[in-house]
Amino acid sequence: MMWKTILLAAALATAATAHAQDKKALVAKVLQLQQPGIEATARQMAELPALQMLQQAVIAIRQRVPEDKREALAGDLQAEARKYADEAVPIVRDAALKAAPTTIGPILEEKFTADELKQLIAILESPVNRKFQSLGVDMQRALNEKVVAESRAAIEPKVQALQQSMAAKLNAAAGPAAGASAPR
Image (cartoon, rainbow, N blue to C red; front, side, top):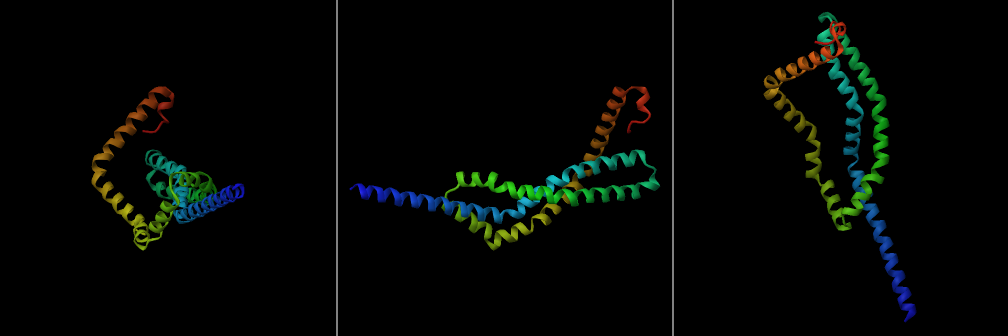
């Protein structure tokens, strides 16, 4: 009887180990299928500081740079931002891909059963899902263009009012000597 118990315990332990390894392989497959999304998120993270700086630069250029020099300066600043992105994106992308198995992986293992992971993989691999995902950029662009076109007239005056209000407060806080060089 003791041998049967030992054999049963060993069989259960072997089955549990195989199940855990199977689940880890399924999680690895999900992460592989999600790699483009992880890379896109990393790209957005890496590019965000440059985009924010370019947005601020556009405002400063309009306010401080003579009109005949604006386009050339904007081009130079965009080139600098591209150079930064060319260097930063691979670093952040590699960090995201390295971190995914130890951050996303445990969540998937904890929250999904092996059967659910198999279903998720089937969904992610389906031709319909791939087609839908491939249209994401086009759908986002179309939405963005429509929203900008329909809201520009209402939003631009608000942005200008905010800009003027902030400039006034900055000028007031900086004192009269700084007011001459502060953005308007």
